[in-house]
Image (cartoon, rainbow, N blue to C red; front, side):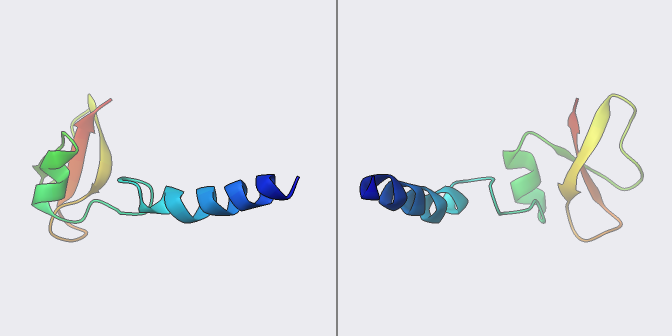
Length: 64
């Protein structure tokens, strides 16, 4: 039973280090890596916002 607690603790420590779990999209490079495009205005209707490119005014958009 104690082994379950160790595995759970290990899972909690390792999981956030995986890509995309805790890192937000904040640059043009990370936006493109996540199959997104940078938009100066709102995202088009067939896309949704997944982050920002250069700060709050520029959005990173990806197809729904």
